[in-house]
Picture 1 (cartoon, rainbow, N blue to C red):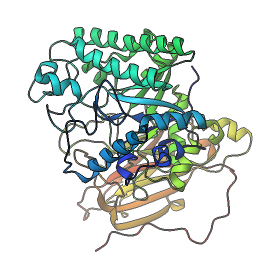
Picture 2: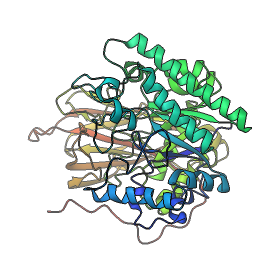
Picture 3: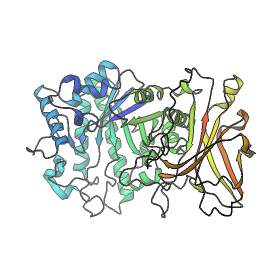
Length: 523
C-alpha cells in the first residue's frame, strides 16, 4: 500500500466532540477532516469513542447514551448530545468524517481501543462487560482487574465485530489497533500463550480486512499503535515483529512513552522490522520539550527529529493533540513534516534532553546524559546526534556556521575551565555569554510526569559560532573540563542543556525589530 507521508490522530473526543455546542451541524461533524485538509496529512486516524463505548451508531457495541439518561458531567453531556443529534439527522460522527475524507482525498482509519479498564456498569463500560461482568475480565486487583482478558474468544470476537462494522458498513479506508490504553491483555503467568493468542488475533484482523477489501474492490489497511520500546511491548504479549513477519500490518506506529521530545531518537528496531517485511513504521513523539523558550517543540526541533527518523528508516511521523484550534504553528508543523526532503537545508535545532523519572530513583531514560554535574579536575561530556547531510550542503556552499549553545545550571564564571567540541577547544573569548538568576523552564508537567532536572534555576548560556568543518553527521561530543573551582563557590554546577542550531543559506525574510526575549521569573 502507498506509504502515508504524515498521519494525524484525532481521538474524536477532546478535540472534536467535547468542543461542539449543540446543535451539531453536518459541517461541524466534518471538522476533523476539514481542519487538516490542505496540509501534509494524508491519513486521519479517528477514535471511536471512550474505550468500547462508541460515538457512532454501532449495531454491535454500546453507544454513548445507552443505559444512561442523566449526565452529571457537562462535557460528557455535550458528547451525548452530538451523538443524539447526529442520529436524528440519520448519520453520525464517523460516517461524516469518512465521507468528507473521501471528498478531500484524506484516508480515514477508525481507531479501536483494544483495552478498557472501566468497572462494570460505569459510564464508560462497554456492552460485553456490562452484560458479562467479571467473567470476561483479567480480574487481578492492582493489575487491570476490570481489563478484558484476551485469552477469551468472546473478547476477541467482540472487537472483530466492531472492526467488521466500520470496515464493511462504513467503508473506512482501514483500521488502527490502539494498544496504548490499559496496559495488560492477559492474566499473569501466560506470556508465551498470550503472545501466541495475540498474534493470532492480529492475523484475524488482517484476514478480515483483506476479505472485505476483496468484496468491495478496494485495499483496506491495517495499522497498529504500540509502545516504542520492544521489551515493553513483549511484556504485554505484543510481539510486533511477528505481526510484521506474518504480513498482518501495513503500518506500525511506535508511541514514545517519555515526557519530553528528543531529536536524537535511537529506536531503529521498529523501522528495520517494518521495512524488512514490506510495511512502514511511524514515530509518535512526546508533546513537550525541556526548554526555557518553548514548552512545546518548535518547528526547527521537529525538522531535526525528521532527519533522524529518515536516517533510521522511519516512513514518517504520527502526530496528534496539537494545540487546538490550529493556528500558524500547528499548520506549519502539519505542512512541513510531510516533506522532510524539502527541508534538508532549513534551519534545525538538535537538542539533548534531561533524564526522566523521580529524583533519587533510577531513571526511566538511562540513555540520556543530562544533567551532568561538573567536578573539579574532571571532564564532563554530552553526546549530541546530528543527522543533517552536511557534506552536500558544504559542497554547494550553502552552509552557514552552526551555533552551539550550552546551558549551565549554577555556573561559576570565575572557575577555570575549557570547553571542547569534537575534541577541539573553543576560544572562551569568542563565546557569547548570558545569565539569568531566576530562570523558569516553559515545560508544563502533568500528574505522573517527572524530570530529573530543575524547572527553575540560575543559568548561564555559552554560545559559540562553530567552524563548519567541526560539525559531523552522527554523534558529536561536547566536553567541559573543569581545571579549578573558585574556592569560595561551594555550590554544585552542572551542564543542563546542549543544542546545535544548524544554519543554511535558506530563503528567509530579513530580521525585524520585534525579536522577543524570554521574560525573567516573576518575583
